[in-house]
Image (cartoon, rainbow, N blue to C red; front, side, top):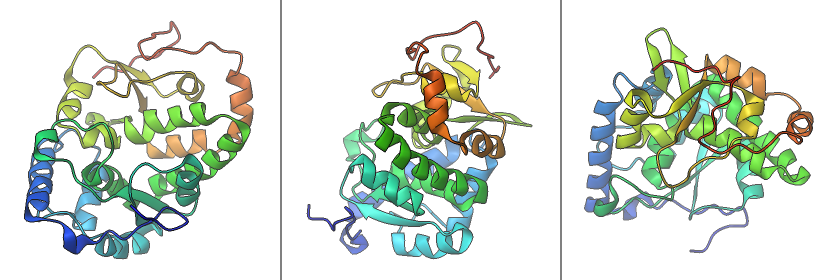
Length: 265
């Protein structure tokens, strides 16, 4: 698929088929029910603010009208996964890249690559929240520096364990904010209710050393206390943090350290 120099394309919302809209409707309805008492309130509020309904795949232009007024972010369509430097550059300038295609009916429960449901339903609602929106911009800027310094693996782990698979402690108990979880039927339930995974208090240096699974449910989740904490602890000179952890061993996704502070589900 042809794209512009910055890898963006047109969404061409008018070209979606009735079957594709029906797939969105099914996924939206199913996840909305599952997430009622599992997703962080800010995510659920973001859904309402954006007007992302189960009527069908949203038009990015309509969503951008709301996002720009709320936090100055906008969604830009891309054909698929894009180069890391382009990804970070878009994020640093408050542009969230989203794919346009939606999974097939036989892929409803699992899809390895991100589709429009994962990107829009999973990611975009929290971009309405000012603090999380600031975190995402800061991450993009940090990613540019990390890439130039050869620390892509470490900065990618931060994204994975927060933006994609993060949990948060609330007064009502643990809640989900990671997009990889909120867009997954099975992991939305597993991450909070299954006894297997380790739910560890957020530790930046620990995360930078920890590998992750890309083809199965996570066995380790990191729990933040608030979005303020997430922004505060990561909005610093991460290059110096990379140097601090460079002598530490790489940890597998199943490692449990004596220093880990476990959070009860």
